[in-house]
Image (cartoon, rainbow, N blue to C red; front, side, top):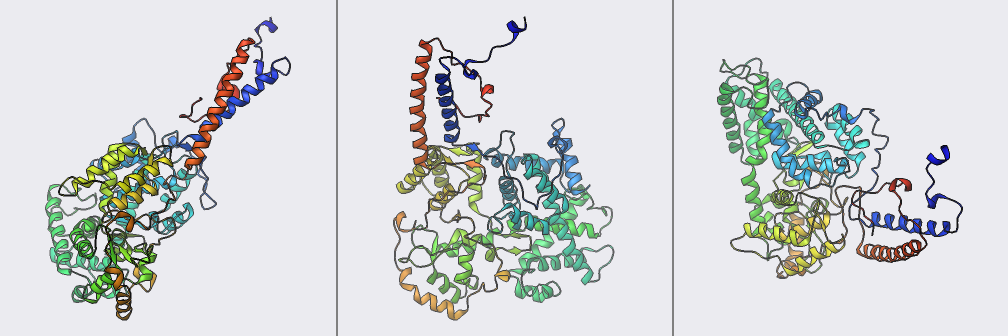
Length: 596
């Protein structure tokens, strides 16, 4: 009976028999085709690299961090555990944050368990702060830190210990979920709020204020906070917040900014009577029945100013961009350096960045000797020299209109890749919406997008460098040119040391390149001299192929398929069975791979 019940070994596992050689050959071809299919896939997820010695092991199962039984309740618990009770996010705000994250989240490459890698998490969190608060977190900026270790090193100086623990554990073991990103956002927001409180406490201490403040005193304290906060990256920041006259000298449009403080304070006072928690601080409004302001109230108002200051400064940013656009000939989004410096010499002192500083920030196009050096408007407007506030660990800069374009594309596509025809239709709609009539994408740019797709099995990576580069040439005034990693650095003028060019140097460069500025640029190929074919993806674990490799693999797979069919026919004539199960091969097949 034991011999009857015992399953016989498959024929391809036996060592004897007249057809063992043929069976081995068929099996080998089958494995070869499957392997080639896997490597031929446009979306092959390679093994995640582990965090280096900087990351510490934290042996905790994924379910211990976010339980699927009651996601909202567990998320609240995780937020309070990470940031403490009173972290400042109401249920309504949590839903708002999740709604803003979802389009970007759906468009990212993910692991089989639905999580994203460390660099993708960085992208999601940074995009949220840029879109919502117009704040750039320095540690998450690709021009400030390129590697996992560099990011963690900068965050270690800025974020609380729980951020370090979370990032190291999640990046090394399980990847990051959408809820993880929300918790990280909450922790970073609390860190910014804490730094706001420290600055405010320093201002209060310097002015020897104690106890409850009346409206006039609170306004004076908050104006001093704003002056100190805006000038911290300058040599005058120690004096500015102590004297309103000095602040008016060194801070542009200071009366308007004082009006922001007064308006925010009045709004807070009104809402405090209605709902003490409306300013995202449960401790604010403690003096609802009193007409004074506590330090907690002042901190709530200061944090609200911090979060909304970028939106308040939008008209100033738009006016500056329009001044630059008027210096451009054609639709290049580039200002000849002679016109840039002539404007500075004529009184527009904000256009006095040195050539070295422009180059470091990635705001200078030096690719054409015919046209000479040109300032790339979209990159220049996003550079540290144009940031309204430069704190050590974050900055408030002009908002990029390209962020809105990307959000529209993410919502429409709902995935990480798309066919060029689909992208052309969507981008044409965006282009027409920004113009008076129907706008057309130039043929050379249509061909460029098609060539990008040809290098990726007929599809374009939405969050790839090549598509960002293509978008820059479609929207040269709105979308920054994406430099290769490491080619642009984020440094404030104070950090760089020589950010402003002397008047004599500006006059010399303006004369030197005057003839270049007079040359007209009419065709796209005349100004696309910076175009490069190197691709870079946010997710570092996506396997990609050059077109020649894809064609070669396809040819080999077809040939091997034909040989396998031939051997299968021969085996069928001799009564052989070629059926076997994947589990017998002891191989793991990616979900989207298939056999030919």
